[in-house]
Length: 370
Image (tube, rainbow, N blue to C red; front, side, top):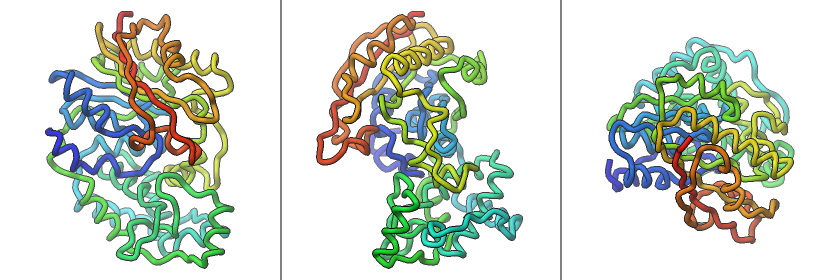
């Protein structure tokens, strides 16, 4: 897979998600340093960018994340299917679920979606919650998630919703006030046609098929890594842990969380996330992850961590990342500046607090010597 082919690969954008690094980051590392038959792990895989990069290079890969939304997106990047198969799958589900049993109500839902669109989305949701084991169903789920909310366009619609942000879900009270103030009403959307258009954009039959999976789990727990299987040993760990203080993933993705089985309201809990109440606690949990990762790595495996900070937590990210690697079996071999989130779509960009400049980020390299 050449760099020019990489630039035209759109599967990475199947569901917009602001906590991400660019595909070029893991892709470039593997293009320069990996060899055939190696395998790649990301213990904080988010929407599966590292795993897709590994797949594009024909490398086996595993991603782990504690967010059901993240895992649903990552899984869709590791499957092989086609536009026709995805549309037929959606049609079958709508035939099977002729009437949605669980349709949310209230001012937000009435203004967010046209009633016919909401009914169709709920039917798809119920069918996918019953069964989402096949490649085509995983792809369909992520396509719908990616179109759940976003801006209205003057041409054919690209999203199912009334005017919204696309990377994170609107908070209900604010959204209702905005729509009412601007007299915006939800428009009818042909759900199947929108699914077909998105499917044809994302699924390229030329993408390599590899042994790959995305696992819902907590990387601080050894049991999560035991689920991967002892036969799976890794040569590369390429990841970006949540930056200290970034703990709004669940509420920011509440609509997509609803589609994968969560509540039809904003969940403000911080369950299943690295704790952010103190620097020592945060560093300790990261250190546990690096130790767990080492158990499933081959000798001399390499770890590359991108890490930064956000403005409301004034910490020095490089020293924090270095501290998290102490006494873990990982030996730091070097580090370099990765620029700031202003250089591209990065984790800290959404939280940078405009007009402040986003803080610098770093890439830290280490070798497994445990």
